[in-house]
Amino acid sequence: PLSTIQSLHQIPTFTMVQSINTKAIFTLTSILRRPALLIPHVSVDSVSHIDYPALQQHAGIRAVVFDKDNTLTAPYDESSVHPRATVGLQHALATFGPSQIAILSNSAGTTRDDPGFQQAQAIEEQLGIHVIRHEEKKP
Picture 1 (cartoon, rainbow, N blue to C red):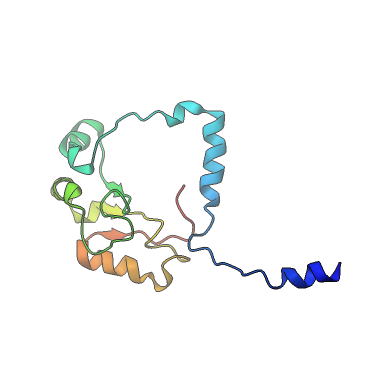
Picture 2 (cartoon, one colour):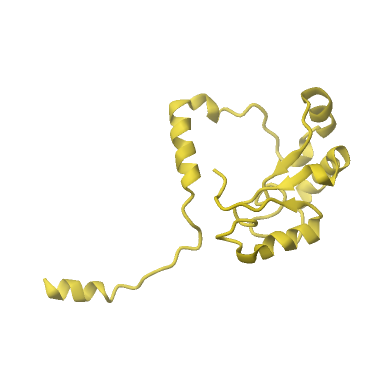
């Protein structure tokens, strides 16, 4: 009825802060087909518990890409490295060098959530680490 349609126009609308992560949805389908992907091969409390020289010397790792939120910084904090991650980041930089370290984040460096890449630039200036620019969120 007309009264129902008119009342629908009075319902308040809300804007979502985060966008839908379609890559994560597709990744979930892969995991459902292969549940063994959910089992971590290595688990550490923080990036400071990783032996970066061993990764380089024994596993042939030549570069490291970190997530930002809850890995290097507190969520949505681009101003400083979390105290638990400071030593690990220093060891990674000493082992691989700044040109071989990068950050891939869903909050900084995305064209949709970081217009003009202002957050990415602030992180690069503060931490001295390149932030990868990308259009789609990582899964």
